[in-house]
View 1 (cartoon, one colour):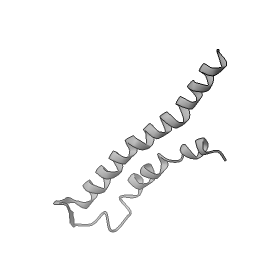
View 2: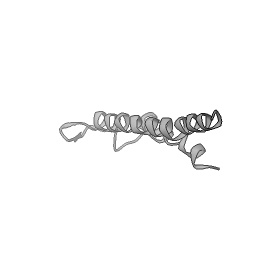
View 3: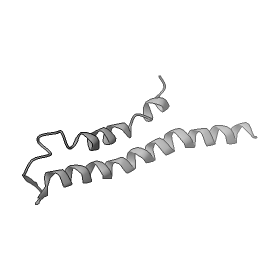
Length: 74
């Protein structure tokens, strides 16, 4: 399996962490992290990490295709 196909799995990690947040006992509890409820911090962190993961897929996978197609046209 090439690194480009493995790159597609990168956004799956934050998505699974967001889906599992309700069932994780250390996240879904009545405690504060950084002065906020732990669930808010957990979800906010994974949402912020989802954007670089999607950008890595965009630049790594689709930009490679654009460069390859531009090279064929010359």
